[in-house]
Image (cartoon, rainbow, N blue to C red; front, side, top):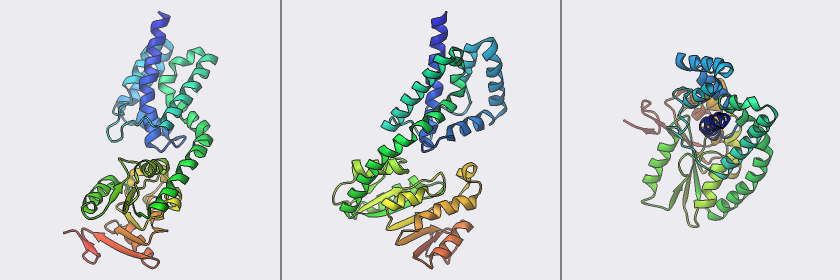
Length: 306
């Protein structure tokens, strides 16, 4: 019976853990982000509120039942994901290894904690992220320096694209428009953070590539600035601003300011001015660099989609 219970707990930890390590990867491996997601999802609907309440009660009466709930819920947050699949990168493998080691230590000290781990897995993942951060920064520096050297030697012009949404689609359209006339490479999938872009350059940028299109995401101030220090855009594009990261940044104004960082080192900026915040940014930036404005409504814009 003990072996059956252990198997149930281990299976629950593995399945629910897949859900939370995917979130960690999607959130750019930011410590604390996984626990925030956990809290938000358990509070997201009456069904999930009831599920976590039942799981808490079950921990005392029927621990295996709590593990089953941790596999099935939060309802709506799939372990496989819909918009971003789990990618088994070396960094993710290190995170899994660190999380497993941390969980093993917890269970060794408090054996009964094996039933808590399927529910509180996000906390374990966040602790592992914090513990591994110095190592990841040291490992990442090497690959970023290599990517910077490759970019410099290639002579490729860089088009950097950011926005609260639509980055990947715009990148795909631009690649399709350019590749008939020039040699072009776009960063794969949603490789839009420091290590993703470094990997894209190191693994895919070939000599003679004329244009490299880089999708740049940000989960906080300074992230795009750091990207542009070694991947300086010739053309920087801001597509849109919306409440996608409102919980992290606090306001759409703060989001717009973080996106604006992409223009600082650029020779030319392309800005969708349909958003009032971006219209102000475009006007201010036009005093410092060439700005091409785009709009579906404002007929005074440089490019109008009718």
